[in-house]
Image (cartoon, rainbow, N blue to C red; front, side):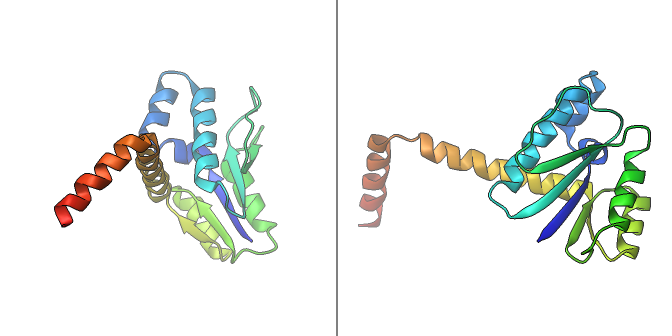
Length: 156
């Protein structure tokens, strides 16, 4: 099984809409939206995801795909390194971070690393695909029949 370890605060900093929320003082909301993005991204995938966040849990965030770990009195970086050190299968682990110290630590232990910027782009691409699919589903059957007729007339 593939394991993802995600540096949550680092990833939030690479997603403009979430960073904007943080700047407005809506830290909890940015975390909740990140979890929604991750739940969408990892939907129907057989993987393990650990999301690390700095500080203490305020309001509980429910997730369908992520185990959420708060750093408490430590830093999230320390918690991430601790998790990497205690992994049984590091070769199947992907660490999502743009923190050079964590990335190098993960590589030394044999984990793969995806930058937060690249992962944010992967999430964004999935959301765009979902938007296109939802537009197609919104077309009612009469409109679809008309589109098919118009298209077949052009070919014939």
